Length: 218
Image 1: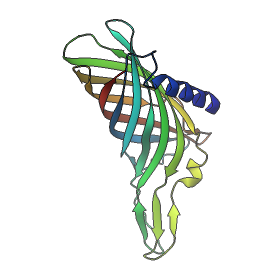
Image 2: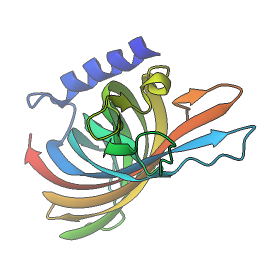
Image 3: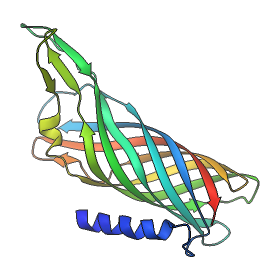
Image 4: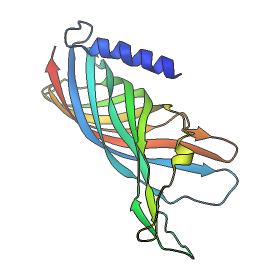
């Protein structure tokens, strides 16, 4: 699976090259992510105190006009996912202080989307539907400290080290494009595969992305 993902990334990088003749336009987008995870414990009533994490995303993309209504849009870029841990710690010993609540996954992501443009106007609404594959390059764990000057501990590293690096999902979104150059887009991206799964627990991503983009001439 990992080898297939890297092959797709290499092929897409070549296709998005500014000199490539395959696509009509290419460009860049920057935005924010609002991501979390579902930790579903199968045989326990324990519910983890997990919230949404705000991160960033940056993508290169290309567009190919298929007809008046549909356009093919591949993308490749960097995206932050993860979650915020909101546990309240009760200890009979030294007080536990939360140093950092954020668990951040630094992912390389490949998107393949089909863009629906029903109206050819200067201010053009559109929809987008597609699939994605991401690969976790690194992560930052939430950190707690035992006592005021005590040792610091990572909260989730033992679990995250067993997570799958590759992850696949889908996305659906709406956008508004101005003069075929600037656009604003909101997408929802649920994972179709699990970050981790065994007899005890299942962990799955989902996120929302808000992006601003700029198209460049070929």
